[in-house]
Image (cartoon, rainbow, N blue to C red; front, side, top):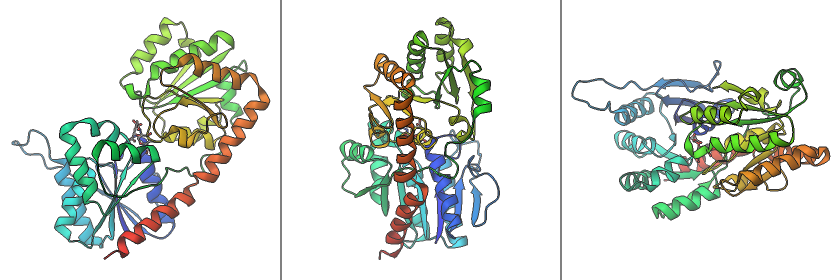
Length: 373
Ligand code: GMT
């Protein structure tokens, strides 16, 4: 098939999933055309069957806001005609599903549109009355719609009252990349005195509750020597730094900023902390599990579908930092229990969420859509 993929190409789970899916489809012999505002950051080296078409937004004095959505629609239509795309797979309803709808109007009904909902498009924008009807329209006009967890399927139905079938297709990890590997050098560097290593990776937006990471770490540190590794950047990072300084913990924290390749870093950690308020899936939890790192997270959104509570990690109510710290200590204090959780986490990620398996599900959906009259 000839498949167009549109996503947010910068850091973020939806862009990661879209790019990794495109790479897998290309490996399977499909022709994949990324139609994006810039080259997706996870694309990496040149790959056979992968093409990138950047969207140029025209600058003109009368435009108060450059019309990206229209430029994207025009580029989608142009690429579709040029290479004969069978379908456009857009990640994130707004504005991508709307731009794809416009492209289809320009090209004709043979161009099919698949929309994948990732979370914040529904769980945040879905509450906005003006956005609601645009999102609903984008969903209803798509030839097929997927969401990354059962929780997100339910939330979309509840918030938007759409009749359209929404198929749950989970996110995935490339187990060739995300697996336990020897990280003893890095571990020695991070924790030279054998301290426990906790890691948090996010965009430090309020929805991730990064201050709870500090609260959990502070409680763990009262009981045993530990280091905290923070990866990513975002609006609440300064607040996190302030809280760490106030607790006199900043010397035990490593700020690594944005990192494109976290797989080697995860293997050097003992636990991942993910105390989010909302999380439609929690890709980073899955990536950690694939590397054998148990997860201390909140019981929210799709996280319980990924992290089996009491097997691959522990889940707590949002904001319950005392329980999260106690759970972390339970795992860090008991070597056998830790080894069991680590093995469970890795097995679950590699068996249930393996890229090959999820790619089969997308491929089957594409065929249904393309073969439908
Ligand atoms: O988590 C974010 O803030 C980024 C956001 C995105 O658009 O990439 O992540 C969403 O999509 C990911 C990939 O499907 C999911 O793993 C995240 O759980 C989801 N984020 C939220 O629901 C808050």
